[in-house]
Amino acid sequence: MQKLSLFFLLFIFFWDAALGQSDWVDSLQAAYDQRYGLDMLLHNGEKYTSEVNPIKGHPFWHDDHGFVGDIYLKGEVFKARDLRYNLNKQEFILSYTDYNRQAHQIILNSFVIDSVRTDGISFITHTHPEIPQRFVQLVFDGQLVCYISRKKDLNFESQGANIGYHYTGEIRNYYLVFDGTVRLFNRKGNFLKLFPKENRKEIRTFLSSEQIEFKKITVNELKDLIAYCERIIE
Image (cartoon, rainbow, N blue to C red; front, side, top):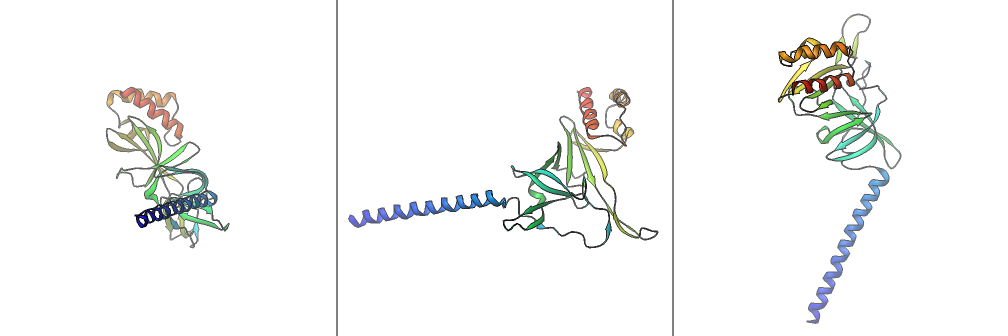
């Protein structure tokens, strides 16, 4: 009986020790992540290597220097990170400094990104095969859903003074999702055709009164336009 009691006490002792060690390891890992910011969910991408061939221009959104944005990954948010959005390859590149103060750049795993947000702009993933770009900017989300896709193409000039590869300027496409159907539009004519004939006159009047031109349309103008269209088709 004494041996059984001793065995039981030893079992409890080692079990508590094991739990204590596990808690210590967890707290140590949490402290490490908090200090160095190297969360494994975030820092699990592919190492980024910049272009080595002479290419004119750059493939990035906004500018070559990047921007500060919040990254949402599997429900977790990582605030104020240094990012660049490669419009040609549809990739987000994260710049960070490790615990040795060494600078790194990695391509984030696109399959775990929920969204990237900066200055009121939200880039999200989508499930529409009609939209070739992996990420889109969400403009309006209601009965009508509106997206902007952005890309830059890499072209080659074989003649003239500018022989070689160069990136185009930013190319935008606009998409409206209505009744589960994705429709592309880029000018007033094909935008009006997205709606029933009885609504087109009102929409045309709104475009004229607000002086909206599709070649120069801003995100706020587009948002107001889609909101107006949603009201009149209800």
